[in-house]
Image (tube, rainbow, N blue to C red; front, side):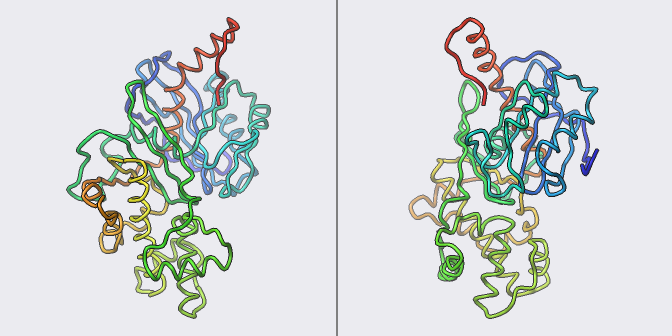
Length: 365
């Protein structure tokens, strides 16, 4: 399998309320980020439980496009059956416009027509990556996440915020509903950065020398940590010596003052943005979906993450009861894309029946 990293197979995700499906239904689910594309062969049972039969991670920069990645996966799984390989649910950052996925963090364009024609697909569904993550968190086992707010567990049902600073900043709101799950994807990463301290105002002014609009994700993401470090170095009159987030976090642990300040500002901004998004969505729980946060876990308890999260005026008592968990299952996106596929299977079948009888209906995404 070309340039794929095999990280295991045969895992099962818990059931979520879903349309009854034929036992043994197979299809492909993928999670496409700016750094890696994760592709899974899925099998579902009649109760809606998901089993991951095989799973591979592909570095995006090592491939010419998503079509090449999926073609490699399909070729390696020819024994799965043609029907399974002709149905795909893909979670991707960005939005679909005129048959293409619009995203600033992917190294190449994604053409839905090219995917359909080259791979001979019968079904192709593309959903927002954090919409998929929101579907996925409902299927996680208890051990798949870590509580970042000790002693604060979910006390009531309600909307759930899923957020993650990775190559960019993604977020979605998951709303419980008797018929399944209602997920509202967002482009929260593109909202204007709102500084909360004098130092952050200085950083914003430095960033605005390059562009008047400074999106939140230009500071709260993997590349955002590098931007913070660059800004702090520039404001301190020194040349930046590191270009990778992992280098900066390691240097922070070793006592480098600019790296440590960059990490501290990042953690404070993470708390502030989570608090803002939780208020906007009325969230009763928060899941952080991986990204760069696992590299910074040892900094979170000692900085302003928690203080900035709850510092929302009259809403402070509400946020003090908000549990925040870090997802530690990297298959979340693929699980979520598969969960979305199953939840919407019934509406797709109804639409197909309507078309067959010349009734008004809906087509898939």
